[in-house]
Length: 376
Image (cartoon, rainbow, N blue to C red; front, top):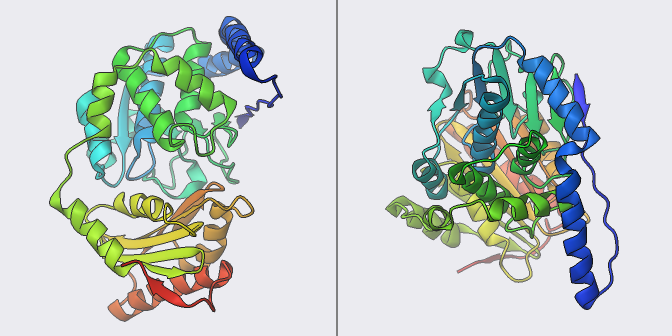
């Protein structure tokens, strides 16, 4: 398995106008050397070997893909077609449920297809984006191994058989990695693809506020001037269904506060994407630095965690607290999620499971003895 690590150091710069001149100079230097870097040449050579002789590519995102996953898949399809004339199909498991995600696909005409409609035997190149083979949050069968993996989440063990893995949590978005790959190849994305990649970086880093690195800043800057901002506005401000407001009504009614932690059981949700969205929203409450939201969709329980507490890692917390419950879990320092199957559990067991998860988080986060209060 080939594994590339991308890191960039931070340097102090002078204040005021000198700092501005320094930043412009550094960006200019980066632009001039970007496509000729040794890392870029190595990546292109390895992609060349992987793509040699390939006829058809399948690029698969994680289940219920977000903008970063969808944009990354589209970017890799553009890269494969451009450098090796290998056509790609973009696929996903689960659903595309969140309004912004549907708007992204519709507005930018991303040709994505549910994996169940495709025959894997028709493809001789398999790529995973924004996930990894051992992660368990994608629909690639266990007996299939991707040749390429591109992801910005922490490295998972057990990715045996992968020919090329560009996996590094030194990025806040997989779209930033894909943008670098495109730039290494000296390719120019059209405005639709640039807009998708820009929104992928923007959404996963919350406009460079959350977990962004210099690599994300550079990708954001480079993509911004190439994006269609009228289309971007359509994606960011879509119409939403009545069930969206009902979900928020449920969230505000049932949320419970324990000191610096807010938790909510949303019950059955209309789309799994609403669980992390509500966890994100609840974190904005004053005094709160951890939020936990759970909700079930089609016999699976979704758990989302958000935090602005830099002393603890949300990904490690959720893995340790759900490891014995089945399913899959993972994430970063500030955001994480888990998916637990419910098909083998009775109604009473599901109720117990939900209570157990929230109780475990209260204990782990040190608020088990805090007085419970309501949001409204």
